[in-house]
Image 1 (cartoon, helix red, strand yellow):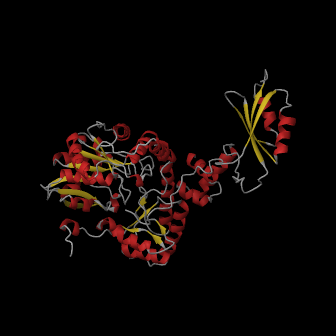
Image 2: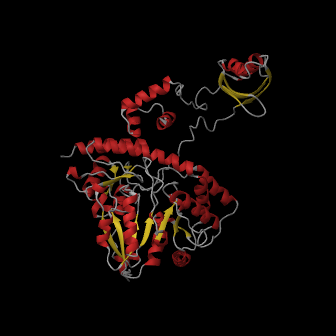
Image 3: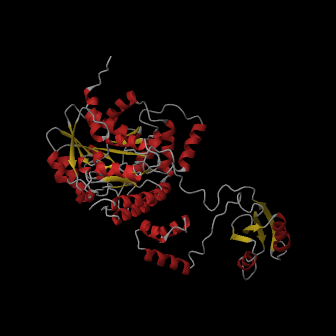
Length: 159
Length: 388
């Protein structure tokens, strides 16, 4: 299962026949294992990794540090869920350290992002403060540039 | 004036691999499954450590035996992974790749006419290196039906009063063969009985599959004192170009090897040694990641070759498959040449690794998956066009 998850993370679009060969399983076994991973909620979905330099350049990404006042009954969970439900929020994590939530926000442009922080996020009662950092350039996205490098200067036949 | 070349050099035949390499080089657009080195670049943390060392100006000679810190790392690594403890300052020598260490050990051990037993098919350098050290190479043929492992009974038949050394290479290039511990014990017993020194080239030892554990003969009882354990960073850590290998052996032998090494080489390159420290101390995760990738490709290529009618057992180690092509009616060389010319896929004829390789070709799966896939499709087309 671990090997299958590894493959899906590398390239979820790989044909099931190739996956079966790589994992030394039948196509049916691979298909049913994937179906199980999906049904169990282990695999939540499959997404393309977009190069923002080449597509939709106006879109802005911000990471926002949020300090919140936890609630007596719900702790951080209820307020975190409330924030996470906004469409602009791509990811939302509870953090240790100097702030509580780290959220990743995507918005159509700078004005929209600023509007989200000023009008939506900051106005939530439990939110004490926010610190917003905008992405300037991407060097690595979801491990996409982290694949094992292949060399191209090998001799064509070696012992 | 014609320059006279020493007879022991002149008598060494041209390498079958080199021949083949020149043909491949002259053609464009070839997919090569003929490459005996990882297709990965050295993991970044290792390269970065070497860059850092260079930035700090670490560019000088090192001790002949290698950096003491590296020798300690080697000693710890060998103890952890192979279960044998070597004294870092007297029983470890850092060499320029394992090839140099093999040469040093043979030159330090052999008197002219001493015999060395090795198993074929095997890495191309063994027989020539033995001859260059004025020894006599005695090949023992291994069989496909044994998975190309060495049988103690076959080895025993090759022992004569002049036999001095047994060379082992498991996992094996080109067959991927590994040894079962029981057979290894039998071989160890023969070495003790006939007072042989074992040179064990374990360069592929990290690359074993299906939970197959590698066993070193150095860990067998009574063998440490008669074994030269040879290993290096090239294969497991994808560091072929750094040229760092090492030998672990009893101190008097290391001292003798060092005598040759200090005059011929002085020391292994310091940047490679600094990189090797990082690799051995913190490279386990990188090795594991590459090993998993090789294992999947191994599954892929064996399944593809078997499906197209070229019987191909799954190798338990290294990164080569050695399919049986005898059903095509072609010799290894004919098969490889025709596959190259007709389908532009390079594999290495099994006979490049000794006569026992006839009827087989070596395909390396240290090659990107998309290339393996295309090569396998072309091999299937080629096979379909042949009788049998």
